[in-house]
Length: 71
Image (tube, rainbow, N blue to C red):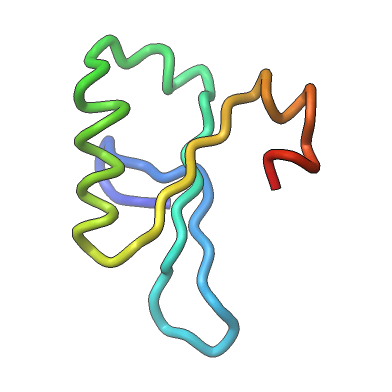
């Protein structure tokens, strides 16, 4: 979800709501291709929060080890 090079891996909105309110950022291959840790881990989530989104990072290793805990 997104425009240009800034993408959110999963965007969630409540049923009946016109706007997204939750962004899930996953450590995909693209995540690791971005060497700018400041942009990747701080600025992108901060931008989404500025638009009223909650942001949740999900690391693949954590998901595979404990999906119920991640949820």
